[in-house]
Image (cartoon, rainbow, N blue to C red; front, side, top):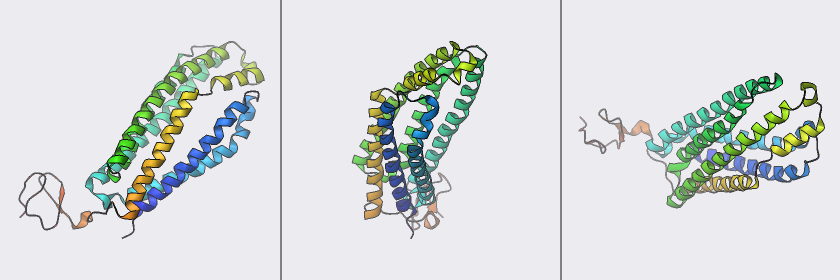
Length: 271
């Protein structure tokens, strides 16, 4: 039997490590770019963006393989993986859609000297997305981990939530300041004033404690993925019988061994 879960976890592990390396590259850049114009930052961050994109692609491909092989490790794991994907996609969609809408309407109101209060909703979206992503990580890996791995997974979840809450408060304050900064200048100055761009970039640097929490969460994620991968690779976590060979109870919908006379979950007698 082809173990899609093992291959998928391997790709995810490599992808997360690559993304982690990319985030490490960003740290010195934040301290070196204080005097660089905002318009020139994208050129300097390009290598890190490429590395991060490669990692993201590997994680995506790996997740697809885990989805394909989800039934090999039980009904509970199979359901958890599906729930995880749904929650992750929901969080991602909320982040992209609402952030884009808020950015558009807020920028439009700023350019017309209107209200800038909508910037604060960036923080709320960040917090909600962090919670959803944290839940998706837990569900995706939970049934593949041993007791030690689950403890680390729960710790990762807590750190993700704390980091998301702190970041949301920071983003709310930062974008509020950015809005006020923009309102103090004419539209023609906004796009061409190097001092304004540098100031906005300085305001956009996350606090050091948020960076530290991000590193810790990335390391914990690498550890739990490695534990799951190792358990699957070494055979410590053995695949279960395919659902196609199991007997499904018509009363509760649970799967039972093919030679069962009674449902192990509800006691229904098979005929």
